[in-house]
Image (tube, rainbow, N blue to C red; front, top):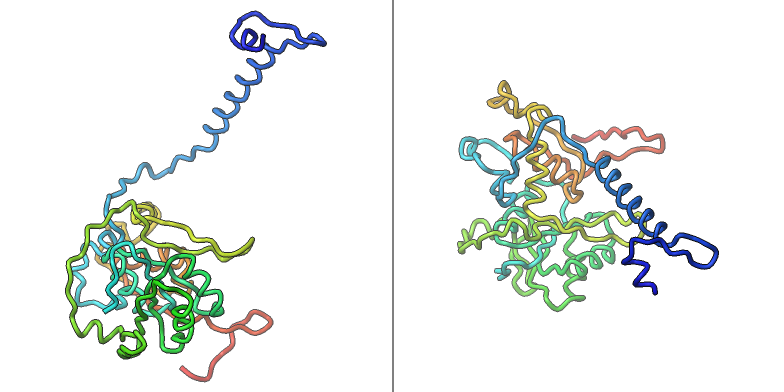
Amino acid sequence: MISRIFTSNTPYRLGNGVLLEWAIRNTASGVVHRRHMSHERNIVQSPFGSVDIPVKNVTEYIFEGYEKYADKPAVKGCAMRKNDVLGLLLPNIPEFVPALHGGLLAGLSVTFANPLYTAEEVCRQFENAGVSVIVTLPMLLPVAEMFKSKVKQYKGTICIGGKHDLDKNIYGFEQFLKENHRCELPEIDCHKTAILPYSSGTTGLPKGVELSHYNLVANLAQGSHPSISKYYQPEYLDKKETILTIPPYFHIYGLNAILHSVLKSKNHIISIPRAPPTDDSGDEKRSSGS
């Protein structure tokens, strides 16, 4: 009986005289119509037209054409393998860039944590992300050592400003660079996970967000439109500025919208390892030092 009602064009009266077939057809068509109208309303067209998104890894895209500015300042043993996860526990320092993009070019995924997190918070995030190597500073080595004791897949710590301590599986960042290690870099799949930033945990525990090279490049390509960024207007192509950045690089806005955008536009970026302290009124405290 029910199948006849659904397949027939003739309305059937049931019980109190409700036209079941008519109600089903009209309700379904109304829902489809409303969804279609809602979908159309939610389509936003950019006033600047379409943007061609190149299929490149984000490092290649950002540093394309840097040969012209190679002499200008910008920023600057663990047996890791492609698809391993590198964890950055760093403030805004110049070494953040080679640590990040060196990892990306090696085919790694990179995550980063707020260096002001407690050791337990850092360990939870890095364990959740599957980190096998941490890049950090000497003052944060105890956090890396705590993480090392919690996981089995840990391969070592790279310490910026430190030296090799092979007994503890710690490697000095500068020593690595001076030793001039060479290896064959893998081919990068632009649609695989490049970075794994974590939410701040406002409504619960922080959650990782997988962003591919293509995601990052698409966002940078959109922001490179001349009507959005003056640095892509003809009169600014050969003009370079010094830009101060304060938002943290471990936050996706500080990373892609500021750090990567400035590097892509070939400007000189000045980083501040920590934001100026404030008093209770919100005003900046003045330091007697410089």
